[in-house]
Image (cartoon, rainbow, N blue to C red; front, side, top):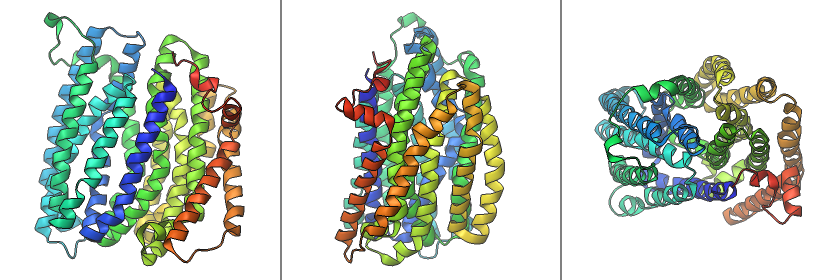
Length: 507
């Protein structure tokens, strides 16, 4: 199982899924209208809040799967744990979905500010959302099993296929039948069924074979040894949902649904910066956990630092491109100058904040691999105590722009002030090297170079010209960021991906 191949497969899949989702947004707005697309944004936010019910089981099953493959558990004990988690996932999905169904009337009539869509249509769409969210949440269990087993090439292929059908397959219905939300979410429900069945079948095939007479029934006991770790992740995941979704929840109540749709559009673009580290984290978390179980500390730190630089290259270049070409990007993408003017500032603030967040997540990966999340729990609690009241006040008084300033400011504060404590605890002597060699120098050179280059480039008078210039600028930022990375420079000298940091522990 090659870590290099897993990272590449994850990147290709994640970039494809992200891009196809972003590209389709203006098409959805065209055929559905801004209000109906506001419901799509609200749906995405509800999925994030549903993660509060996870109680840390999804990352726990991924970690325990990796530990099993590293020799830290027997096949029977591992199968018992999986069966116990299946029962919990099913129960929580049923309860959570039922609560969302029961709340659909209140949300449609009292919470969302719809003016064009009938309330009955909004409520019916919300009911479909509840079923879809419950089914997609169960998918998390099987994704955890597959990713923990490092079957990431298959998972990347499957995710890309489902995303294609989900985003593009609905277009004929919207174009030829109707742009009503119920039609859109009815199609998404059908795809959610196919997705769940596909993941369930493949995950069960990857489980270790045990004798027929020892196949486990449901029992609570297998969860007890991992409950402390799981609940710690549950708390931090809950805090994560609170700090990343509170602004969206508040704005869904404050803004008219059409304006919330435009806000969602800006957030979708900015979220692409954060999603850059997703493929890498999915690949390195099981590998780092396995190396920790095997006692290969040097290999773990090599992967940690190399992966940090890899994410920093892409996050720095993406956030710099969005920062200096936000309005051009939005206009070239949507063809709507008014939308571009109104959304550009929001996009810049969230993109820079997300660019910081992409690398600030790495100390969590180190703690996850070592199975000690106490410091991460403390840091998230402090961050939440600062962020939630501040972003609530800012969003209430200054709307989306106020929320963006708070998001950027507190992410920067956390990166500068808190992360050194984490490194001092888990890897003394690493902090300065990680900050300056693996992160800061890459971001600093990229943004300074981007600022200078943006001053020299002329404005274009056509959408095609703006798109071409933005793409060229992004490529220049990527090359500049790569040239600022010690890992990338060493890799270039050895003809591409032969850097030993990413090979260590591959076999």
